[in-house]
Length: 277
Image 1 (cartoon, rainbow, N blue to C red):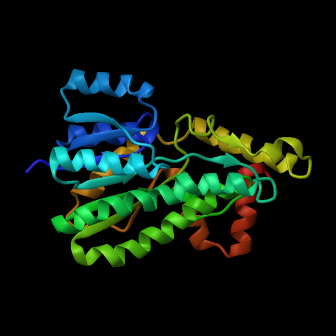
Image 2: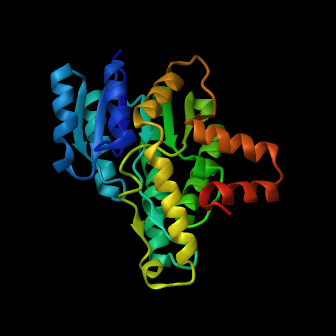
């Protein structure tokens, strides 16, 4: 029986590589994106390699768009075996500088859209008696640091959601996997927004400049998104997948340091790593 995958945020980065990797593994893959003007590259590769991949429109922030996309897939394939919740973005700014509107926008895409996708797809998987939901979290879902507070909070929320879902959906044969990349070498950080107030305020200017500079420097040596896609494929192939997978040497290093140090020691360690204090 042909297996079917649905990937959100497939126009670039992790979503792009994961869609291609799944198709190469034989999954009929629906590579979804909000803006179909960005479909040319992935469609060209799929055509050249004769991959079972189809690009469809899906705006994860829009109820109707999600409903229509899932309906289309079910009408065409009658099943969904893998859902990869990847779509997301980030905003620079401290808790004071990110407005409530900006906080809500961050959570709308990074958290509530994942809930929206799961509420539409989980019933399909329960009826099948099988399925895998892969939630792209981040090392920022396990470790807090300054100047991307809204983004980090949304990823911490994904961790809690995913852990809870494992208990709820597990008895129905539906597995939930958390993927925790470190700094990935994509255009993610270049495309991050900056909170409006952060551009206007001098209070946190020094720490903001230091953190953004430090993270962007780390991104230059970051893990390629293809490695994240490979870990996702590995997790799906395993007879009994783990609850979470860490991707990237930097992520593994930070988590090991957090495990070995006291909270205060780890704070001091992270300050030094991020901005040399």
